[in-house]
Length: 543
Image (tube, rainbow, N blue to C red; front, side, top):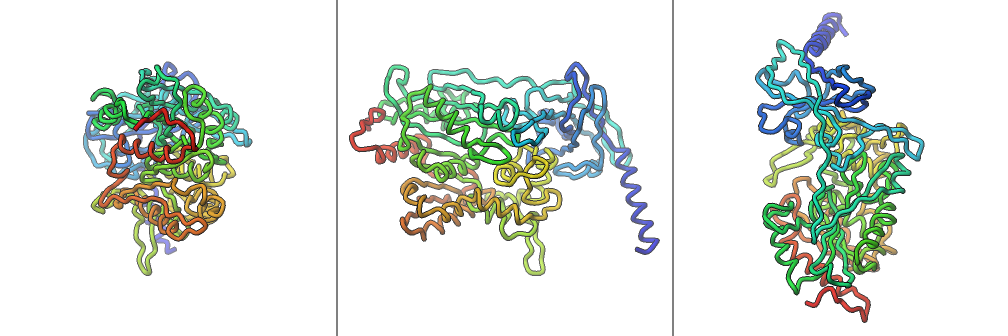
């Protein structure tokens, strides 16, 4: 390199590092908030408004925030976030325009997990909040502070995290909805710390007065403590809004099928949901759910303990689970309704072709290099690129500790890494793909490929059992994998079974068909009736 050019580069680098040193946030916590040293991750959030705390304004399309890992940070000692730390959606503090902002600091506390496989890892121990670090009980945060930021002048701002996130409030049980939580011995052994599973159960009309046993719908999905299917007895209750009230109106009618609906809770150190299968990184959740949690449900509640009386549903993460559980446990379940499932064919994982792409962040098209789109609006407008999405996760947490979507896929689907974390599918900073990891994904968790490879034994068990719904404008391109699955099923032999597929024209994430919850439950009940053994009395539904 010529001396002049070399000198200019070094001068620019020196100026950048000097600038970074003069632009920083110093984050500390007092002993009153946390007595001992903390290993974890610190954050700074920056917002133009203070209507909500800045920590509650971060999201995939939210306000800028920045993070840095910490190790054994003592009370009173300051951790620094400066212009060298990665942020999202702006990558550096130096990109924040001069102006007046509200800033807030946060400390996400990690715990030591001494796993049964011999690895020791530091991760966030879920506190029954569903791996949302900005809301997790016991974590620390500062009050919001109004400040002037000017990257041209630089600044040093000290923030003390003296506030503690309070415990989660568990909704009280009602005559309709019951909740319980158990410690899993299987998962506790794997992780080396107590790990919990839970269930929220929606009971049918007159359950307390009856001795009847009922079929059960296992509704899959993200962690939540709300009533299954959004069931609500009043407008002010439940996540279902008006739909929850409409379900209540039908659920309580004399001629409505009397079923039990259960949502499962299985947050873990990686995510708010385990994907309900066994994994070398996340742990044997498939075993724990089927050997501990469901037996506990069948012990506490009067359910029919037969495959034909167990059906599945779920959307997005839950959609993948609803299909995967039917495919991987075909002798345990009697039918699935899978809505907008996460990638059922890894040829398209939110825009990434796991098997052919050499970089997760862009496509090479002849002479051109185009960014891979991660998500879109229904009209096709780009919401986020793959690079933006992955950098968002990387700011949330390194080594797969973001609590976000692509990290949990890598944790569930990927092989074990040498450091005890998962072996990544691609470099999260620059996007370079790792083909050997892609092959592991394929052989273990690609649902379409698994069905193809095992169709001779699996096919007869799936006939009449598979129902898949997706919007053809799904915001995360999940319709692409569903189309690939359907195209393959159209050509199945011995047996020939095409499945049942419904596509919503110009419908986004998460389309579940034109039917409402009550209508879908009646459809499921009819399916269960058609599969009952001869001579069985269906006292649970006199339609």
